[in-house]
Length: 115
Image 1 (cartoon, rainbow, N blue to C red):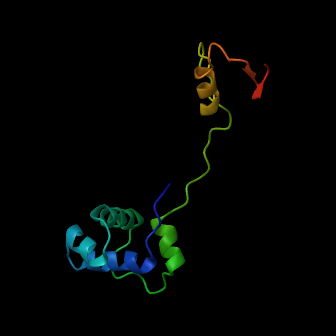
Image 2: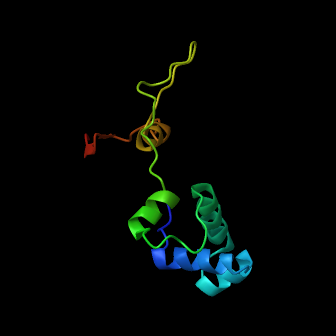
């Protein structure tokens, strides 16, 4: 599951501090995020062609769209088929049930005692 996205306030603060020449480590410590988070924001901003100061007319939703573009839906429409292979999926409960079947059921069948 993806991590919760940073607030726009923190993202803008990362960009501002990086523009002042601070290192990723200093920015991370100041904003209280991981260095990898600072690096990812910096790279996303570079890829989007953004630099500090941000344009005045750039809204937070527009900034988010530039930094975190939505991905197109996957192109695969049908399952992949491999020649000569058969794939069988089992739920874990089925495989566990099959593995734990006793040789002798001691008179118990389908949850009821038969004797």
